Image (cartoon, rainbow, N blue to C red):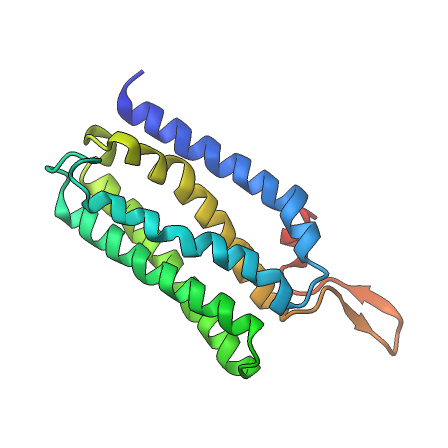
Length: 185
């Protein structure tokens, strides 16, 4: 099997597996929680995006790894990790809800765009053909996990911190925005 095929298979299968973990286990656990409690674990996983700096370490990756991929991937991850950590801390602090939510939205938009741009750049430079060394697992295992956490965070933000929305007048239950996606319905 060629490197590009293995790369694609690992990325795709990782995305499927992490999506199933999210739908079957993570979403049901965080769905009933307020955002203050539901988001920090997802944010802290993203705070470890400092691992993306490995693309700048010539002892780990081939020094010929194109800087058009390595630099934005590394520094974009560093910025996303910083925003994720600040967001997690602010969620647990007594900061205003508007500030907390603005930081999480900023992180999630920047972090998602950073990953999508890295995927685009990775395809443009044929990343699978480069010598990634131990860093091979960043785009094939960690990036799919991060993409899934971003989707979960978007779903949680869209539902606005409520597990369910009830129509108190009619007594009817209706799903909160994004709840059907997170619950697999």
